[in-house]
Length: 209
Image (cartoon, rainbow, N blue to C red; front, side, top):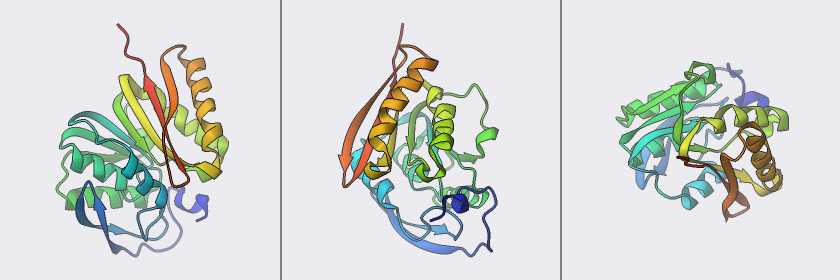
């Protein structure tokens, strides 16, 4: 898919919603998707690989999904951790509204979805999950990650899925160096796991004090 298409604030073409049956957090659910967003016809392979690999989220806390799309990671966090507050950020207005509507249909009152500039600057997160938009280009991707990864609370962790042949192994040392330059000694970055051509990358903020 053309990255400019699903990464645009206002997708081209009319919104024609359709229903999609998926399994999230061990539940068979039906969600709505539409054209002009990322992976509208199925749970994409990267997100599926991540959900098979990462541990269940904590029961409570403040969680973030960077780039919600129609909501597979956001909804999984909401379903798995009803005691947590889930924030999704999404630049594509159509995708953001779909995620909001899907959360409402599933009764997830703990889920909120915003444009990136709507999240208060001082807000921090105990857990970040993301299938980041690799195809937007290296410069844009780096800007996105440096906008959100420093928002990890002390002791928090981020888990990101990146396709191996789209630069996962070079992204990891870049994250480690960029975060250390910004906040020396506060972050670690490592490979959490590998699943069918995808890397699960982990960033932790060191708990101090």
